[in-house]
Length: 51
View 1 (spheres, rainbow, N blue to C red):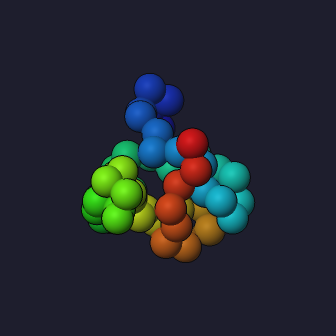
View 2: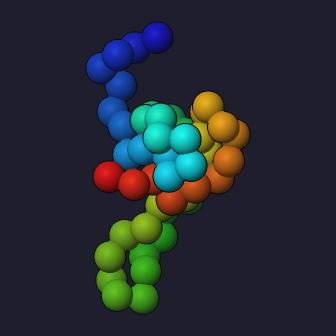
């Protein structure tokens, strides 16, 4: 496994880092900021990663 892989943040459910390769959707929120949804490779849930 590549330890230099960039992370999207941590899973809010299990706390594991989510690699960028697990990104599912990028979108713009109503306030103009960027939101993302990704799949957690550990718990297999679709989550909004936390920084």
